[in-house]
Length: 287
Image 1 (tube, rainbow, N blue to C red):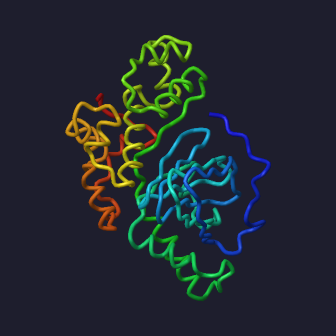
Image 2: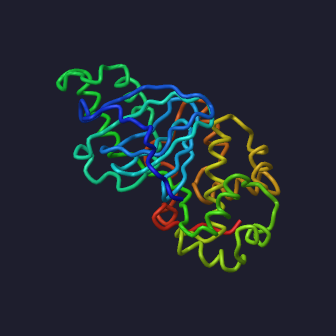
Image 3: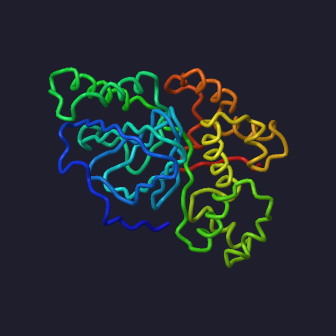
């Protein structure tokens, strides 16, 4: 998708007050922050609520316990899918080196969560050698150890494929056949299936599964049951959905639902999908 920087967006800072700056804010369900970029690294994190982030290369749905690390200069727009308590970090790119080149979804450890919340109540110009500086250094150390979560919905540039992908994103559980969706997009199903690997790096079924995972995490964050999620996404049974989920992520949806209810997250490195499932070159299985 093509994003155009919004002329209405205004940067919060002309220059970062510190190498790590935390900015707390709240947003309502349906609020949107139009396309913009930053000259520094951004960590988008919500202590409560769910948001959707779009760039020219992909779509991410970010529930609590996850964060999106965004490289400098990457155009992105945000849509709030619920009431959201944002705790955004702006980070000097030199402080994190090559930690991010585009976007990375991170599993937020309990320690990182508490560090972010603590820094968010410090003044933005905290003394570098005081408590704020200590928190900032611990945050950078913790970020360097965070694992990437292999969930991303890469976005194509071909307009016909964009039309198909937009429809699937809007109605991920639709029973409509690919052949019918392809006609609406102005191409044959065979043509679009051939385009998927070239445009997104994923085969069609793999891409659809990434959409399903993204929507599943949004629904899990709202506390919806696995059965309700399976029905909404068009699976024949909760067990069929759970099998797909576990095959790709190494954990069941019930596991994540229980952890979020308990306020816990897996330790860094635990339950992470194999390297071939990461966004750079994912290879899933057919549903």
